[in-house]
Image 1 (tube, rainbow, N blue to C red):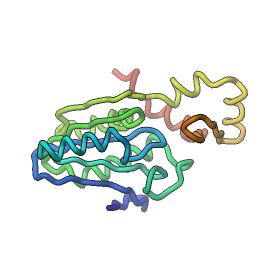
Image 2 (cartoon, rainbow, N blue to C red):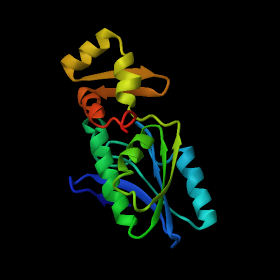
Image 3 (tube, helix red, strand yellow):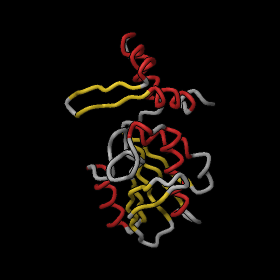
Length: 179
């Protein structure tokens, strides 16, 4: 199924409705999707235990609309917020974030604080655009991103596209040094 956001993005999602008072929400990682081993295992657990389960793909990921290069932490957080609101009325929520998904989940804690009863981070990577990317990039990479606005890295997992917009927006969303 697809959910259309206020910005007209079509977000691919799956909702397992077990009519429970708890909904587990899974947030996938950077350049990932909702079809990985982690969300599938959590979905099986929720089905067995008769717990609601929601998983989805941010714009530019998986089968959701949009281009990955247009994405930012702010944009993906807002998409997640809108979709979760649809399924969270009077429900207790447990967030499970993988890598970047933990960052997006952490961004949403204050908004869903009345409903949130648990948070699990798996290989959590909040603030990764600054701490694990920008601060570790060599000067030539930083210069190319600053000048061109984009760079593509290739490794065993395929190409990784990093935009200046993603780096700058990440700085606005830092959570690790907040009180």
